[in-house]
Length: 319
Image (cartoon, rainbow, N blue to C red; front, top):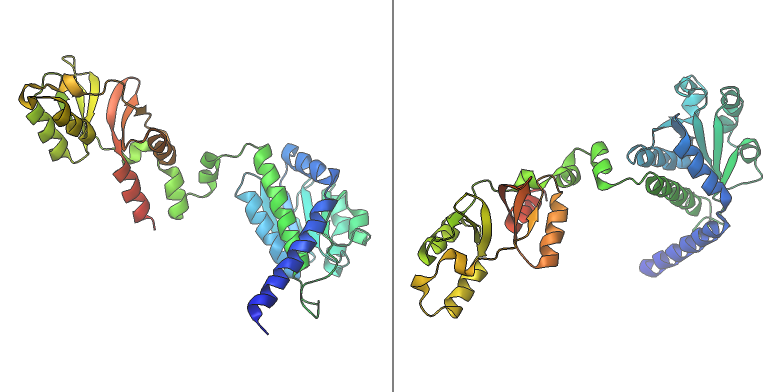
């Protein structure tokens, strides 16, 4: 047997089951999203076994994207950990069969606590589904594989249903990259998202003046190694920018380069960016305008220069 071919068939089987689950999603998802979004209480995810593992992932996904959520193992819940649940919490219970004894044992206490129960189950006719306030149907026709006993398509369906719920809530909250950073400050991802222009800009700004001659311009551009220089007027205000490209064009366009002043070949309307803009947005601005440097300006005050090299040197250091 070619296991590559067998693997493709397993993929196809699970995808087919997911399509069936997706086709059954209805108003209950709208209700679940609105219920969680408007609740001032936390969301408790609970389950046992393989679906419990999926539940732990769902709780982590919700918690990291703006929803106050925790995971509670159903087996531990019946031995005291149910005390983690507060009155009026929303409890999402994952159980493919909907008949696990540990799951059923916590239903009555949850009702006494006036919790709203959302069942994510593959058995809409189960006792869990009947006693739940909302049911997200993750039922599959069969598990993948010839024996069909190990949880495969059923746990995949629960995983994707949880992802759908998480992403719908993210969009409902208008959850942006800035919000994501708040919950992911560590590691390379957090560092990239937390990085603003002010963290990467060069404050030793190359500078020449309107009447600086060509030699002065070339020297300043070369010595500061940013491929550009800012041109200042007599009031020490930025009046333009000169890049390596401007220098090359000046050599081609002027007959006697010795007579050329900075004001003769500078670009007046240069691109600017604020210091608190994310570096990723700065890179996009450079790409759109086909440039490699940006002047960093705040309240008309020039703070520094951001070069594309600053961005890529930082990214490479995070790999």
